[in-house]
Image (tube, rainbow, N blue to C red; front, side, top):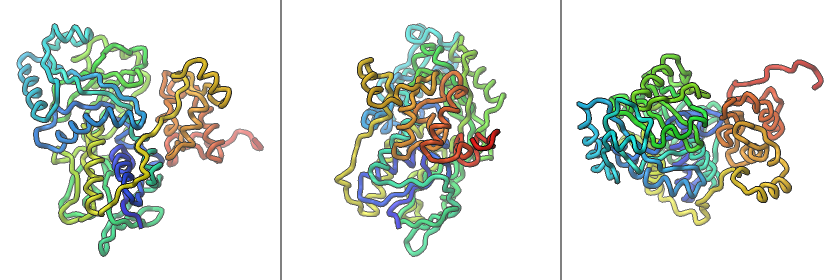
Amino acid sequence: MYDIIIVGAGVIGCVVARELSKYNAKILVIEKSEDVCAGTSKANSAIVHSGYDAKNGTLKARFNVEGNRMMEEVCKKLDVPFKRIGSLTVCTEADRIGELDQLRERGERNGVEGLRVLDRAELLEIEPNIGDEVVGALLAPTAGIVCPFKLTIAYAENAAVNGAEFRFDTAVSKIYADSGVWHVVTEDGEYTAKAVVNAAGVYSDVFNNMVSEKKLHITPRRGDYILLDRAAEGHVKHTIFQLPTELGKGVLVTPTVHGNTIVGPSAVDIDDRESTATTAEGIDSVIAKSALSVKNLPTRQVITSFAGLRAHGDRHDFVLGEPEDAKNFFNCAAIESPGLSAAPAIGVYIAGLIKDKLCLTENEDFIAERKDILNPSKLSIEERNELIKNEPAYGTIVCRCESVTEGEILDAIRRPVGARSLDGVKRRTRAGMGRCQAGFCSPKVMEILRRELGVDLREVTKSGGDSYIVNARTKDGE
């Protein structure tokens, strides 16, 4: 029996796992996909929000601001790229300019520092490509950008190093309590624990409703995005939001920590909890709406598009902690934006609740820091030559667009909670994220996966499950 079972290995599940690994506890993370960061956490805006938008007194407001303040130190310890670039929330209608002051006042009550309303002249000094119809903006200097893949993976790796177990390709079908023990039923068997953490994203209401009469309802909200090539770097220097509506903060334009520019999302409520296909309508909408806040956006530099699902709850707030009628069942439900920003603080909060309930003791051997995959391009020529001399795989470029070496891919596969698919390698190393979108490097990465995992090439997948790439050999005996 485990002390804690966490259902879901997105950013929230992995943060909670890492925070709980600070204590002496037997921890299991169960994930239906083949890797961490395979759901909502892999397809979002990668924004660390400042916290001005959430209504005063909500869990969103509290944990957004706390998470924002924690993010820089967390990223240093876990070796995750993070930049505090600031955000601008633009207004394009003169009769709505007063809403910027309302947002500033709300943010100040939430504890956000440095908020300031800028007029158009001030805006043009810092963002020359601001839209022609923009009349003013709210500057939030504490906002930032982070890599959501690297953050989730870093938390998972650090949790694993500190003793947490991970089981992938394991879908949970039922959760129930019996005589004070929680039973988690999966397709691969049944697991028991003293406590359960429900971090199942768009399925979090399903599991809550199995165990509690306090019902939740999650609506999957699809958001389409486009990603621009690094050639567009510098077109905007801040995260550019539009004035919020009931469906969110509108279409944003922002740099990424890797030098690309991301634009989106749309906001479409759907019924299918697995529908992440982009639509032409959604992409057209994103491009058209982005032009209101940023002009001359080089959309011919689009290298890919993608869509993600947000877990929108009917209560319009995070749902955290125990339902009154389900003791030792801890919800992390309805975690939509600003969930990524709030994640570090949510992890500390939930782990604290569980520590107190289960009377957990400190893990004196806890390892607080983690190093990311070595990037040879950040080394001096002398250092790189020495590295290649000792580890020749770092001298072989596999992904030309992103200059990813075989050594980096081998590290990604061999690390704790390592990559097992093309997408797993991509999220850890960026192999396949460049201009050609894996057109050149996929066969090479597949061969490395085949060799390292000891499987037939026909068993290598794009993203787990039945996403096989090779159907059959064209010649026998090879």
